[in-house]
Length: 134
Picture 1 (cartoon, rainbow, N blue to C red):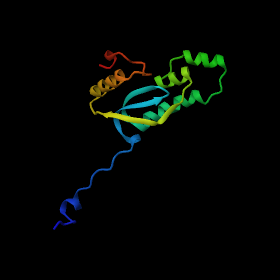
Picture 2: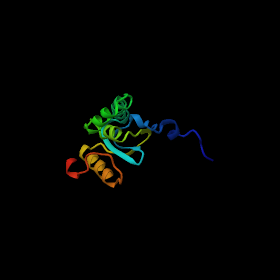
Picture 3: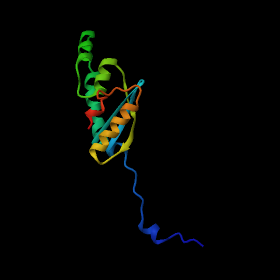
Picture 4: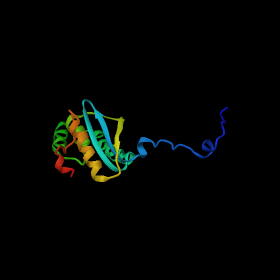
């Protein structure tokens, strides 16, 4: 006969999974058209995604002439995601973002990000040289 009220059942409560936006120290991936962006952050993923979104929306919500779009495409923005949107006029699928890996040690996290970037065929990241991460 099995007891349903055991000491373990009364005392042990498994942790709830953190929401994607609240996870910290992660390597993440975003998709657009056929390209992907891989990034890492030591802060919460939701904060970092919010920063990317604001910058992308600052250029995608404007009504620009052809000459202004051409000039915008030659500028280097804060992130590679914004550069991609400016140059290719693509839409980012924010809901498809996922966390690839979590790492608390900063150098190991940057190394993992580098490995994920080099594994991608169609990558929109600027930094493709491994030495920039170490």
